[in-house]
Image (cartoon, rainbow, N blue to C red):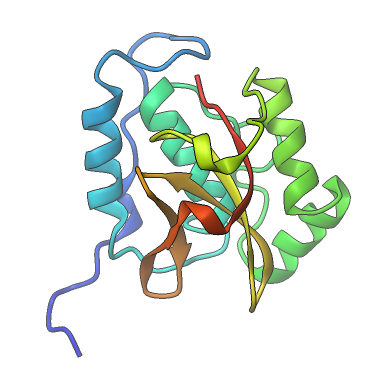
Length: 163
């Protein structure tokens, strides 16, 4: 058991954009993405704060200045039941991701194998079904019970280009 204190979400929250930047990536997005992943590495899963959807949206906010969760679901649930209700309303994780990505001009890639750092990936988990993560090179970073989990990009089923 680690004696290191767990990182809180408050300290790992992305910095808001100083000016609207639209859908493109910020000039310093690689550094911002690296810092975001480092800050979230040990943040435990929490519905409505550090779950798969909000982790990905926080990552997008970090690299683009755009918060894709702002209108549809940020602040609208705090537990698994609230998340399940919201996901049911939007057709599930996959359908919600399709809707949000289309609304912000993030196009679907022909295969997840060509995803680049910062892109959104959809993968299937044995325990919870479809989940979202961010491409961090050859790996997918996703919110996990004790912090981020990493899986090979090859396990992703779908991918969308961010920015």
